[in-house]
Image (cartoon, rainbow, N blue to C red; front, side, top):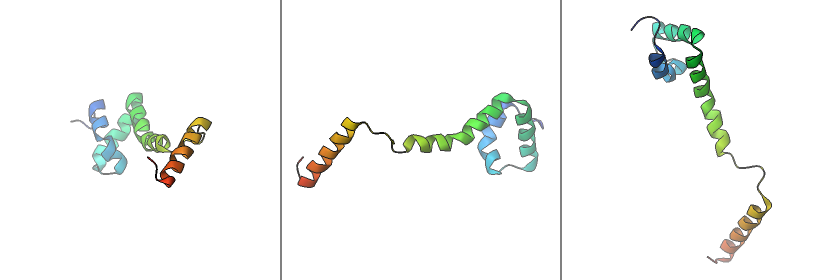
Amino acid sequence: MSFLPSCHEVQTDLTEYTEGALPFSRRAGIWVHLLFCRVCAGFLRGMKALPGVAKASLAAPTDVPEAASRALDAVQAALKKGKP
């Protein structure tokens, strides 16, 4: 392994790189690689964006259609009455 790692090596170590868990020489090599490699830099941007995307996809919808809202109300009313 040389000072400047390959794309495969960079992508394998990106989690540890973002967590600061790699030795300085390894972090420096990845940093230089990311300066020149748009593919790996994009991979890192996508990896950093993933938690926000996942959180947004799990958020409750803000605009529930009227029919779904009525159906939910009916189910909740039936459960309160003890009906299946």
